[in-house]
Image 1 (cartoon, rainbow, N blue to C red):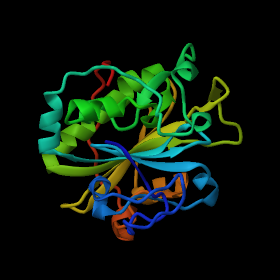
Image 2: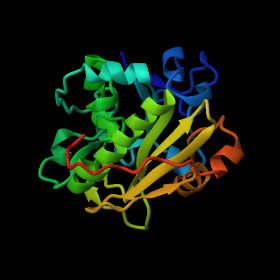
Image 3: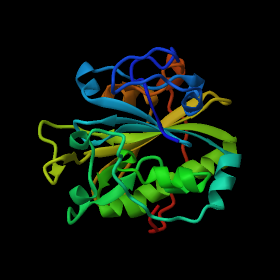
Length: 261
């Protein structure tokens, strides 16, 4: 069952902050490295933010962009083995726990030309309930079709492959909105200019991120956490040391297969 959690103080489990930021739960803390959620470092980004805790991932949703700002997962070999046994059932749905004026609707995406792109992927979900939750529009951004179905699918597969090699990873995925004028679908939902996926290995103490423009083509970069966090104004892994964030771990090259995630 999904729960709201605080965007401002995940360490204080019993503290009630506002109507849109309720107490953090022990279950949701497990999705974060060091049991510490990302923090927004630019105050303007905090407007209309609501934390959502799902079974297998957590989201910080923005009522301004009507998208997640990030989706966080803790992937393990065991969780991915469970996920392989779950048959995919597409069930996109609006997030009814959010205020109607702040949430995306199915009608926003209809005829937009954009895919509904998962941030926490359906293929990562270890149960039918978790997979259903991943289809919440609170976990979705408008994504260019080729980007979503080919390049980003390959990056998601590379993340799962790396998890199988390492044993576990903490993963945070989200949109980037850059420039003075951001495109919107249906005049409501912001279209990301780029999409990122950051990974942290808590055993090897290594981290890096893929980042790709939200356009057709296979262009992407691998960057350090320090570079990405500065660019998006979000401290994705507050408990990770600065020297680890400054180094760029080697990430596997995405293998382009042309299948949707």
